[in-house]
Amino acid sequence: MNNDTNSIIVGCERIDYLGYDLIPMYRVLFALSCITVPVGILLNIIFVITFIFQVKKVFDINNHALLLSCIAQVILAFIQGPIRVYFYYHNGCLPIAGTPLCELTVYLDYIPTQINDFLMVQLSIERFLLVVKPFIFHRARHQTHTLPICIHYLGLFIAIVFPCLYYPIIMQNGAATIDLENPSETQTCDLWYAREIYELFDLLITFVPYFLILTSCLYVIGVIFYRKYFLVGRQIGQTGPRNHRRLLYSLHLFLIWFLLTWSPWVLYDFFQTIFNLTYSVYIDAITTFIVYLNYTFSSTIVLLTFKEMRQFCLSKLGFQHGLSLFRNHVVPAQK
Image (cartoon, rainbow, N blue to C red; front, side):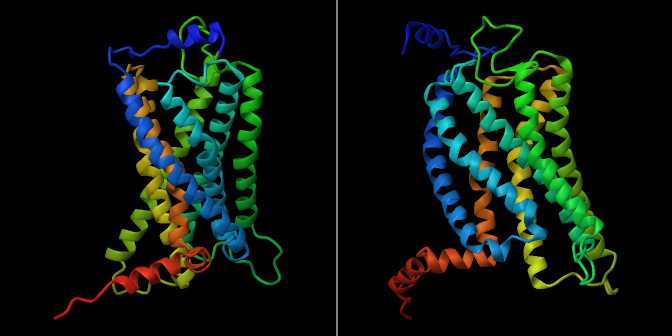
């Protein structure tokens, strides 16, 4: 490592704006990441193997957004997990802002994250539609396509293509991994904007998806309560087959986990941006760590709730044999 790099690292801030020592926090987050990152990578490897072998059975129009979101999160778990461990190990000082490694880190963080957010919006809206009208994506034999199906595929296309084009373009036209207004200050590797319009647009594509997801969840809760308490004893109509109910159960858990892990960071960033408040770096680092828990374990929800994938794990990956051995070693209590 050259002298310039050393001087930057020595100058890295170990105290935040409010006077709190950051070293203990980064050590705790590093220790926790040494547990969550390897476990998350292992679980995501199991998900990828299972998905490859069961793709024809589980990948249909009702769960395109769900499974594509899992794939985006697998990328984050595989790549961003080790980078976060590296970041915590060096007390938030590495990667150095403005370096090629920092730029690569930003690309590999922002693009899959935004793809995942857009897919989660589509997933939550489609979940509401599936609750209200279970067969909305059903296609009659004589039909080649329907309006809901066309909108579905258009939404998937935009959710995947837009972030892949937006961030490379914005990085070449008014954004950088070092604060352009204060380039002399020691900084953390992140995406910085030179124009307010870019910051406003980033605010919109960050907060609008979250509030759309939250609103659709409230609508679903309202529909469920209405059917349970106001349509008691009436003919509610067809609620869909068992596979449809299993899919809704998986979507419910998936979205609840998303809201639990994302809400602290979104609310913190929202109030910080709108009211121009100054918070300790502790809040930013801890809420970001919670967000990465979402990427780490979301695919596990699909593994456990999708019958075909769960059965494949139990039968083909040796988990069923392990359960059998465990049961054989359990001796019933003698009466």
